[in-house]
Image 1 (spheres, rainbow, N blue to C red):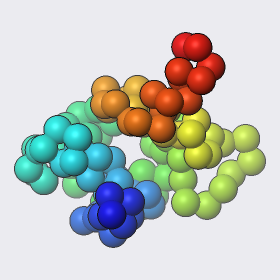
Image 2: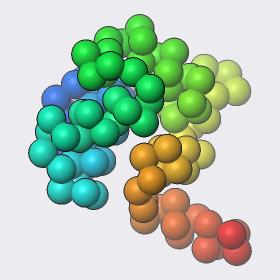
Image 3: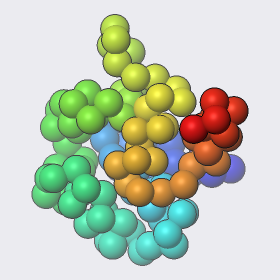
Image 4: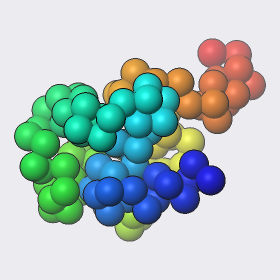
Length: 104
């Protein structure tokens, strides 16, 4: 169910920052306004830019945290999740399991 909430969340899912805000709401139990402010701060942008697809595409590309449309050489799947966990300073179970399998 978490995935459905993340993808349908307030700001257009992975196209913008809806998935990142949803992670903060679920992992840190933040209210939406606090989650938006936290994510915007981590990304180094204003809260209003979280809903701008053009701004977020560039940021997602630069930070290597995944995009809806695949770009050759850009992180996908677990690599993008790893970067999100690192950026937002949150635990993501699949990332932790992947790290433990590799002995990291």
